[in-house]
Figure 1 (cartoon, protein in one colour):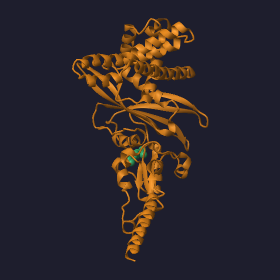
Figure 2 (cartoon, helix red, strand yellow; figure 1 turned 120 degrees about the vertical axis):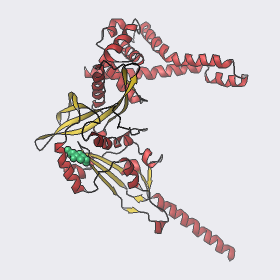
Figure 3 (tube, protein in one colour; figure 1 turned 135 degrees about the vertical axis):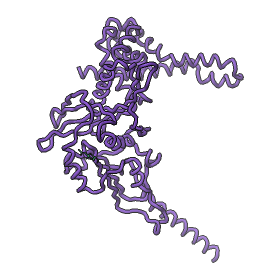
Figure 4 (cartoon, rainbow, N blue to C red; figure 1 turned 180 degrees about the vertical axis):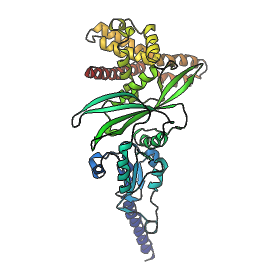
Length: 421
Ligand SMILES: *[C@@H]1O[C@H](CO)[C@@H](O)[C@H](O)[C@H]1NC(C)=O
């Protein structure tokens, strides 16, 4: 009796734990799905799910699992007026765990969002609609650098403007705080900048649109650039962050923005060259495209010069006229040379392959030099393990793989240039 009683209790307890676990699992939400973002132009957009978009990342706020615990049907709404980015913030759910019934506390979702969304948002839809009406008075910050149009299937010809702003523009600092919250959702390792430093330049993209017969401006994306000092009297602008908001991605705004930024700094004599902080693969591809577009008209990069190799003239011309450093100019040369090379001609294709591989081999050669140095001070068994990592067969395979990836990227850039021509 006694033993059976204990087993029964244990079993009872185990099933309880099990159902409890199942029940609690229902209270876990994927935060990338739960967070609903929206750029609102018209009041009817608020109820239109078609304009909602979701984060790619939320790990910086909700942890690596990107899960919020404690709610069923969680929806975190962050809706922004299209221009000024006035913010509506609401947390909705169908049910929530309670401490008294479930002995667990729900995550403080609201508190976590408040950490990145600056004060001044509203939680009331009617208030948000009044703020939305004020968007008619919103004008882009700073000075106009560049205007361009994009053809849109539905809307026809749309006009975009790129502006340069800095923190001295009235209202800009607060606007930038609202804008930079998007970085958390779309850049894997985003961090906020200390904008209160006059070495930052901000470049903003806006779309002009029509509302009730008036021209309004919608925020499309932006770039931040830090002006580093270079001894004795130069600066080196370094691109720090760049984001095109998801509803506008794939329309060529990134290339327009980067080109406008390059052209802006090229016109300043004190600028040495333009660099980027920890660039992503996508950024490098975008930059290659833009730099090739800028360089293809330079005499030193003319088709008949390309097969003679990467020259001092190319380095100097790219540097002087376009503030492009040697490393970036080298990639431009490789892309333009690929475009000018008949790759079905075996001899020419071989020359091209060797030329690119020579550059790619640079880091391996350095490894070998280091290895040679190490040999002198390593014990034999340590040496063997290092040798193993670097045998020539693997080196060749790695090199071939890198070459294929590089050329594939180059081909896509060449295609894109051709489609724009
Ligand atoms: C933009 O938003 C800020 C902060 O909510 C507000 O103070 C300002 O009046 C708004 N400007 C416009 C034109 O809506």
